[in-house]
Amino acid sequence: MTDFLAALGLVLAFEGLVIAAFPGAWRRAMEAVLAAPEGPMRLIGLVVGALGVLIVYVVRVHLV
Image 1 (tube, rainbow, N blue to C red):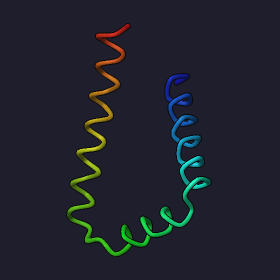
Image 2 (image 1 turned 90 degrees about the vertical axis):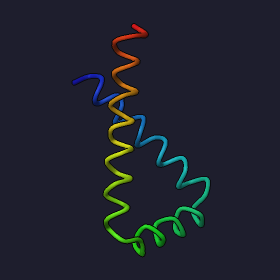
Image 3 (image 1 turned 45 degrees about the vertical axis):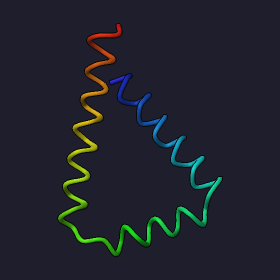
Image 4 (image 1 turned 60 degrees about the vertical axis):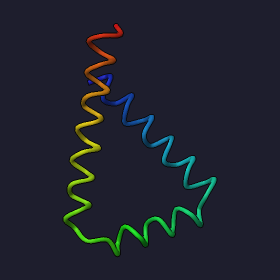
């Protein structure tokens, strides 16, 4: 649970810094996301989620 909370904190910190540094680009990106069809977004979400799980697995099992 501690690792999960630390990871969540890192995601929030990174997202916050990106929004603070590039608010216009972030707004345009969100507009593009809203206009995108759901099918490809769902596939991208699954791929990114699987990549995240793979990274956590590699770090936790092979590097520790």
